[in-house]
Length: 196
Image (cartoon, rainbow, N blue to C red; front, top):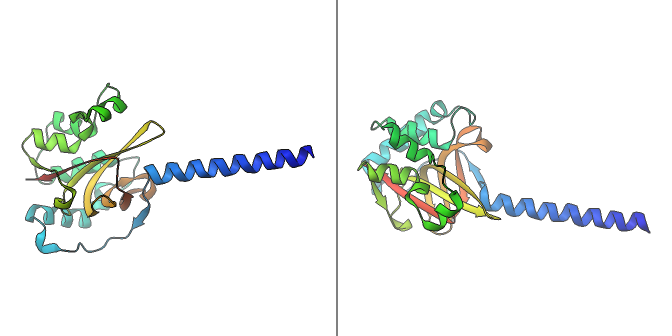
């Protein structure tokens, strides 16, 4: 009888851990890893965005050969610097270097947590894209999800957006071993910017 109770308790514990892991994964990690593909609606993409997409498709793996060498923010910096130089301060804004409390900054919608968005807009090197419906492939994005009070941030180059449903980006991520294309469910907080 005691063995049976222990077995049932173990099953419940394993099932609970599985549910916890599944919830964590869906809320913080890519839901799909995609192969390179063509962007649809090419005629509505700004010229600079087309250039960014061409660069990322051609040199993405070279820019971020491994996640340990090049995290998402470093990938974004490398892409932007192919088109315009960045100061150290602008790079650090993309990296979101701060000693402040990130969860509190997220609640406050602080410019600090907007990363690439803040860096490019403040330097007048980018234009804020406020509506998800106006986002185009080749725009840059910084987004955040919070799971059990812990924030998870990521950034990259937009490949595709289904407003308020999902976002697909080119970025550097551990799951893709560096450069890759990842699809996420719509984030809790998301900030878009278009390079001028």
